[in-house]
Structures are given as C-alpha cells and as structure tokens.
Length: 78
Image (cartoon, rainbow, N blue to C red):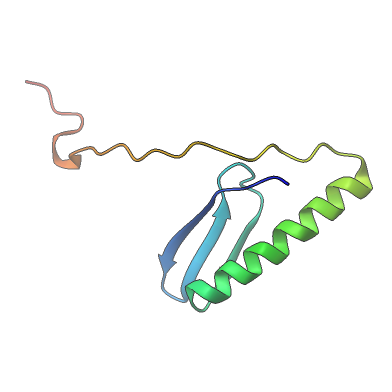
C-alpha cells in the first residue's frame, strides 16, 4: 500500500486536485468530494498505465510542511 498526498485548490469551476508526489495526476471537480473521487480514479488509472508500460510508479508518502512567509516583505532590502 502506498499513500499519496493530495493538494486541492479552489478554482472558479470548483476544485483542482493534484498529487504532490506525482504532479501529472491532476483533476478537477465541481466540489471537493467530486474532485477527491476523480483524483482517486485518475491515480488508479495512472498506476495501471505505468504498470502495463513497465514504468516505475513514483513513490508516495511525502512529508508535507507549511512554511509561512509574509509576502509583503519578500524581496525587500533593509
């Protein structure tokens, strides 16, 4: 069993979902639940396609950490 990390971004039409460890796996959905379901389907299809092609499936289990930054001060010199 491999765990992948999903990232969801609110967009005008609903949500975009993407896997952090496998950025090519990206979907959209009308709401978060729909996006999550389509992302899971896309992941299953990509695993199947990679397996059939003999390609190595990217490793999962990323460590995610949020790093805060004050945007208004980025790039300013003192």
